[in-house]
Length: 509
Image (cartoon, rainbow, N blue to C red; front, side):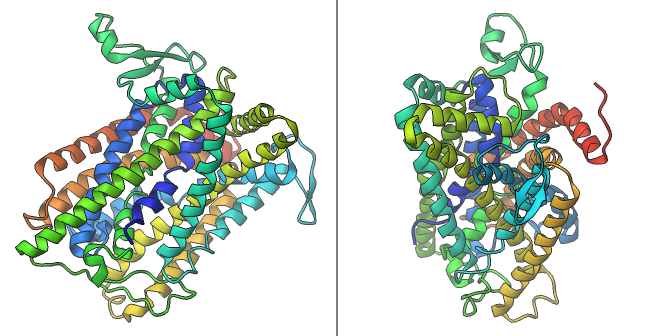
């Protein structure tokens, strides 16, 4: 009972950004730019503690608190529907289809490969990828409908992911990586001020901003061709976007603080005796209550610092270790080509009869990372909006508190249908991935500032965060918004190219 939200969110911290964007950055620049990820993770630690603070005091998730602030719920509905669009786009299912294809066929998918047999049909690689993406996305349905509490199923799934993926990567790191690789990655987390420089995207130079200014050389020439990937890696390190917000939902469902008196979201199978109140509950700030309150805040802080934060650093460092060890100097920019080269490098390093098994395992871990992250992302989206609807809509407030599971299940079905439609209609994953990365940056920055307002104006004086904590969270909010602007400037040409790809229009060089 004293280990939960940080474990679930820590396992989901090794996701699309860590497996897709981080290794591409480290393959080109090593670990020299990871200081941006350090700032991102530290900012999210403060954010997670503060959203849990609201849940501990009220028994409500942070999104419900946001909708209680001025100018009113209808205003915030439009804002957050737009900011949450990045979580709705099923890019993780699309990205996870390629490594699954490779595991099934023992080869990397190719646009020029002839049609092959799949599920009794002769299909091209692209057609098979699309089917596998839909199957992965549909599999999200399973853990979110069984296990009593939905939270219990997510906890079991993420524990399996954490043990399998971290166990495999740590084994590779110990036996097949070098000390110089690890020294480069670990030191990169504290090389504050390093920036990518050079004239083009193929020029992997790094210059330290502070050293350049100190030596009178002025502002370094930033390489805008790669700054978008670097910014996306920084913003998605940890969880990113609005995917941190479910930390407050899990705090409630774990039964911590006032969550013990409110209930949880039950699954459709095995959760019929579980209820969820339409509103939260608060406590009087007496001396004895405040003594227990300090204990809960202290425990949430410990879990963030001892479970979630280390999982985030490992979640970025371990996949990047593979890329630094096996991809350095190869000039790869395509995610699938990088994944294939990584698997080949691991196979060659292991060698012998075990080499092919490690090739499969490397790609399987990629699939597991992306598929389970799709499940946690879907659960986060559903929790944010189901909790808001359950609390705010008058006609839903008339429902029996035992029927929250039916609402969750209904919204889940709508989410699945919309996601499947996007996977079938939008060709490839480029547009989904780019759009998600850009939206995530803005969402996290804005959410940081809004949480400061929620905890300042809705919580009583003794429960509010200190001025220092509020100031730190506001500064991190500004940091994420600056990262968002940089990513947008850099990715506009790529976004136009991806849109033209969807429309079938060639992009002029």
